[in-house]
Image 1 (cartoon, rainbow, N blue to C red):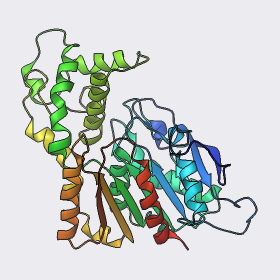
Image 2 (image 1 turned 90 degrees about the horizontal axis):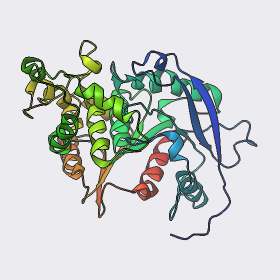
Image 3 (image 1 turned 120 degrees about the vertical axis):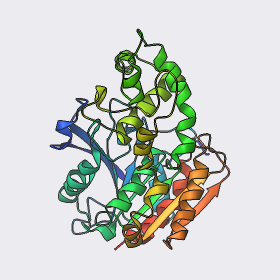
Amino acid sequence: MALKRKSPLGKIVSVWQSSKILKANPLGDPHVREVRLWLPPGYDSKEKSRYPVLYDLAGYTGSGLGRTNWKSFGDSVPERLDRLWRDKKIGDVIVVFPDCFTSLGGNQYVNSSALGAYEDYLVEELVPFVDATFRTLPNAKNRGCYGKSSGGYGAFVLGMKNPNVWSAVANHSGDAYFDFIYRRDWPNTLDELSKYKRRSNNNENLSRGLDDGRVKRFLKAVWNKQKLNFSEGHCLMNLCMAATYDPDPTAPNGFRLPFHLDTGELIPGRWGKWLEHDPINLVKKYGKNLRKLRGIWIDCGRRDQYFIHYGSRILSRSLLKQKIAHRYEEFDDTHSDIDYRMDKSLPFLFSLIKR
């Protein structure tokens, strides 16, 4: 954790992309996005060289813009890439930092009628845009994807659904085993939303996972705040997940809720929609695609405060049952501040996608 910092080797550049896909997003979030990239040392002088590409997916409340920032008492991502390159742990590679932030705090990099078609944006627009703008090796075999938390979930799910786009993925503490990691936080969410309850409710509508107005009022309130407290932040996160996993254009706010807002009773039909997106339930469905990948990296801290290590273990065992090769590691840490694990995953990915 030295405080002395070396001069940059690679170069951070920014380009702007106007997305036709995101232009239709229901939240009215910007469709013109800044995309940052790390270009390896010598990129400008090696005019005939082409490079493999890695995509860095930010976690919830993050974006590619934040991923390239300076960091205290540790390497920023660009500094880490410089060091790994200097130490010959990785070679020449372009790293892309997409901005997929939304008004609900982020997304899981899947298509949702309530958030926007972010999977399509990445697959159909951003990847071709990067290949057309920079000297990439424009093939799936030369392309990898990685991330932490929601970004880890996104990298794994994007890889399993699109092996024609990415050939190697790294999933750091990615969301898995929804019965453990999400259900336990919904009492806090219901308590927070109850502050915005106005009057007696239509019990039938609440039993169907529909908002009686309190979710809408909560969102209006937090969108007008400069700072969210812990409970508000977690409530917003669970609403973001509801918008991701159970969108419904006919419902208030464009999505349904998995719990009765007054009684806290689980609504099985609605919760089932969430479980359809749980990686531990997707492995069998996408086993054929997963076998096409050159490499899968999964790791998690064994003291993860969201208990994602249990889901990571189940995910690894599910892959083993399907005889899908992967690398799984646990380490002595929590969910927080674990970018140092990229010292292991990035060389792993680079070894698979290099020319």
